[in-house]
Length: 141
Image (cartoon, rainbow, N blue to C red; front, top):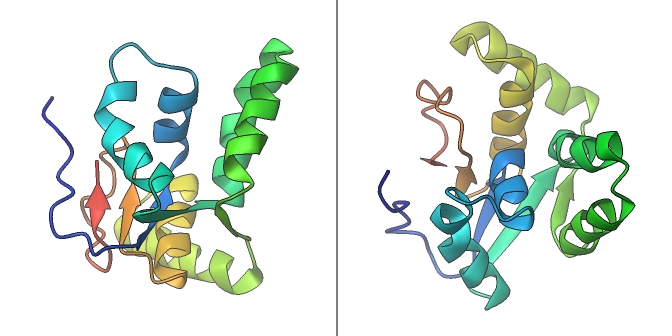
């Protein structure tokens, strides 16, 4: 597992961040947290902008709610409140359905890709390898 390839990202790039990198970072995953640390450091320094879809918010909050960890859920909310939130609209759902049908993506992945495309994100940041067929979007994983 090498470093993330973030070469060529423009200054102040907009990245849509999938659930896994957020979970790894906030829950301090022993292996994967460091893989995504450079992106979070650049965002904190004001050199990158992050966006998150409403489905990713649901995914990251599910774990803390399942464990009854309100403190962790609040940490997630505090981090995500400064990020751009991409709402799931009818148009976005249709775009996701088209991607899912064409590329055989799982529905959450199709929503992530459609969300990133809809906001003209410079890239989608994920730990998922299922995005190889998505050519309309740079995927950093």
